[in-house]
Structure formats: structure tokens, C-alpha cells
Length: 108
Length: 113
Image (tube, rainbow over all chains, first blue to last red; front, side, top):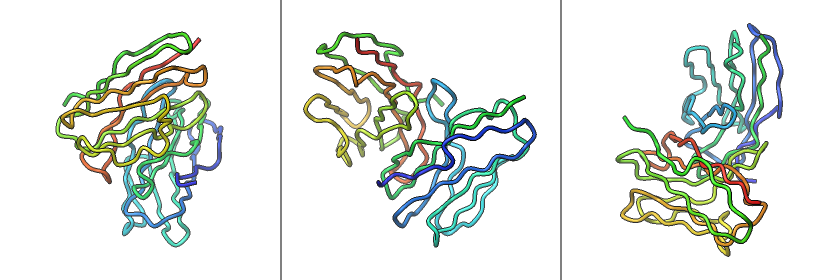
């Protein structure tokens, strides 16, 4: 398939813990993007990382990119109940196609 | 800055009927996307426009779905005739360009009975 593939499919953690989710893709990219979707709503852009970047931070979010392995990871530190959502990745090389996402549940 | 506007928010129709969704992207955004999201799945790209030209419609079921983007601004997505499996949320997104971040609308939830 051409879209990014997120892993794991589901993740359940306690508030305060860190959450890590992964994305793999198949072709060379210029950038990779992560999005969040709260139940029943549109997706919200979180962070964009370019192919010449290895790591990027935004608040409690940390994204890494390994172009040799064609993979990226999203780390959410000190998670909160409000982080409960589905998280998706997409790359420019696949015309912004999304995978099935990782469903994160943060328990208070 | 106004976001991506979609209407209607909800739509209930019977199978074999027709339905149309409307999307108004953020002003100045050249690229517009339509996605179909079935419950529990990720958004599936149906069609991508660059201005008023189609970039990718490889996953659009062209026997029943059609989309247009007149004058490179607003867009409509039509289903005719609808099937039960078309029940989903239809999301519109726009971006400045093809490699830029996407801004999504709230979606239209379609139920086909």
C-alpha cells in the first residue's frame, strides 16, 4: 500500500506516562506529517518533519524521522486525558494518504 | 482566519438516492482533498485537486462518485446512487500546496439506510 502505516493499532496508558507510536512508509519522501483526530471530528495537524531533519519538538510532542529505515515515531510526554485520540501519519510522496492510525487512550 | 467549511453536517438518505456535499477551503489554498472515513478506519483519499485540476482520483468510485472544483475554490462531492456501504464521514481538507500541512473541515456524516 502507498499510505503510511501506524503502529500499534491501539495504546492504553495512565495519565503522566509517555506514549510512543510509530509510522512506516515505503517510498522516498520530502516530508512526513502527524495528525490527531478526536472522536467525530476532523483531523488536526500536529507536526511536519522534513526529510533532512532527524528530530523535531513541539511542546510535549517529539517526532523523529529515520529515512534509512523509512520510519518515524511520535512521542507524547507526560500524557493527559485530553490526549486521548487517534493519531495518523501521512507523507507527501503518497499524496497525503493515511493509514488506520493509532488509537491512544489515556486513563486519568 | 476562517477554517475549512463543510455542509451539511449530517445527512440521512435511503439507498439509491443522490446526495451532495459542499466544501469551501481556506482562502488562497490551492490544494483541496476529499476523504471518506468509515467508522473505525483511517481517512481514505477519494480525490485531490490542485486549483481546478484533478491530481489524483485513483480511489474514487467513478461509477457513482463525482467531484468538481469550479474556479479553483469551492468543491462539491456527489454520490449517485448511494449504497449502504457509503455510510461514512466525508472530510474535506485544503492546503497551500501539495506538500504543505492540511487543514480539515468538521466533515459531513452520511447515513445511508
